[in-house]
Length: 220
Image (tube, one colour):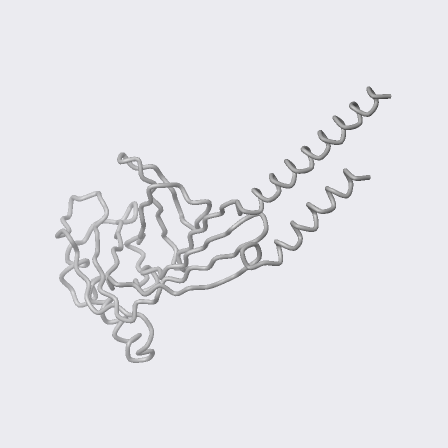
């Protein structure tokens, strides 16, 4: 009976703790972006003949259309993010097979949104970042992608691919235009500690009662 009472006390403590903000909470924080630049990689699609004039020289080139499209975004939605400048980090050449890094300067860069969902057993932390691919013009010649690197593997991400670099970092790549989301799930350690303390208390009480019972039996 006493053992059941001890377990009931542990359960009551766990339920009470789950009602506290340390064990049951949801909050959202916006983190402003200090650097309004982003890097997009431009990959020539397989089977497409490279046309350097198309890419760099004509009025309908990628860069010209990119700025033209974003000028329209600015005119229609001045508070929305749009590209103000675009420049290749290296000059494209006709025989290159590697993707080109395209640096974008973005106005009205949206803040990064961090959400923290605290539950009795787990803490879920999600980061939502603006995806610069949403500002790139559609083009059958190219595939666009963007990415980030991290020292550790995240619990989940809506990335197209995740790979390990030579430096031992994880590289995340996105080819879609949806917002970039990265999620980490951690154990909510305080409740585990309380549960361990409760179990240790119950075990101690049981050992004490058993020892007392044996002692009383020997006296008889």
